[in-house]
Length: 287
Image (cartoon, rainbow, N blue to C red; front, side, top):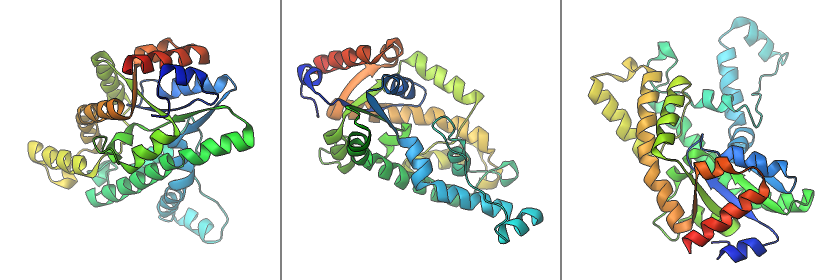
């Protein structure tokens, strides 16, 4: 790990961390606190994915849909309008909309082939955005003079790595750049995440093998063909499966490559000094 002990962390003139874990447990909350201190550069992997790696795909799909409308088609063909996603740190809905959900086209579903294609685009984009961490560490120092750096990763990071492999290329790269910090939720948190997702579901990114398994299981269990699947019902059902699938993967990442803090501990942090002390305690606990 980048910091071999709590003392090494406390003494480091440049502190760098990468948060991972399920969305909704505090990654962005704590990143915003650190950014607000004026000493930490906040690198959002999801924002980088949306603006650098998926923006053109999203714009093209929006244009494809607009070309179906005669009025918009005429304007597009004469370059009279421009269609592009409106993406901010706080609004990444365009990415979710582009990823979509498989199922009945009449209910907004995609074919499973198209869904897999967009999932693969997201996988490539997320790996590239995570690999860009080192570039942004250097950039934040060279241009802005920030001494510290926080990488706010997406919930699907665990889908693209094999934590048991000591030579995993992505984890090797990231662990050399920053301290990997798992924000771990309790069973109560898990149930709240499920309830929250049920109220406002959003598309997810899945490991290809996991997606194939849950898709085939859902079709078989409900005796449905692809075109009969209600997209949102499938999405809700799959989310609970994904939580169970990801938990041991996050845990192994933390055990082998980083440290663990709880969502409750993160929620109690009020400033950068609180956070630095929390990480010191996590390193002591690991030792």
